[in-house]
Image (cartoon, rainbow, N blue to C red; front, side, top):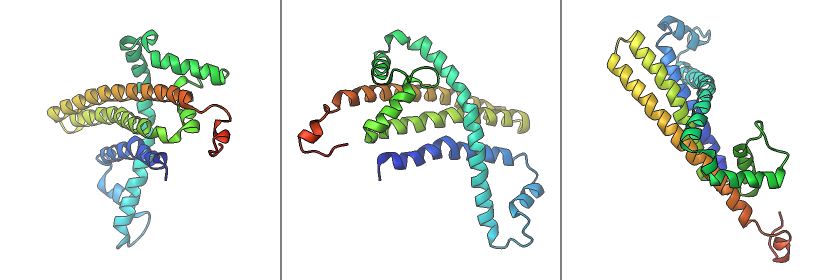
Length: 221
């Protein structure tokens, strides 16, 4: 088992399933009990011992589906992150990014542009050259995607508490959670991008010269 094999599951859990579970719980509050009970029975006249399994399965399925919708809504925050980065981290001062950009142009100059960003290229480069080096990058990516989705979920909870529960204190707490989640999101995303750029550059510098593996008796790629 390689580190990425497990961390891909962690990415799915934090980016999709966990936010989706929170969204599902919130959605359940607006579904009448008889309607929800009939939906979970799936037409079974006498569910008996199957009821807990059906309920759990339906909850997980709903969490997975809603998690993708939350993920899609959270991705709109990336433009806010780009604005924050340009304001607080001017592109001209980001030496790590420029080093990765230079590497990208020297290796595959035709793979540049909006559809193939330096970040996407650096991740693919690390995947090909040193997959084991992605463990920490994937952890940071899981964190930033979770907190990005948590911004959306917190706003949903704030609206729920303000409009449906008449609980302004809980609503203010949810707004505070949204603000703190956004701050954590931009912090973790910045660390993830810088680590990705830096790792790609380091991997390229540490790559053995052509033929070195064969001449030294090592295993050829």
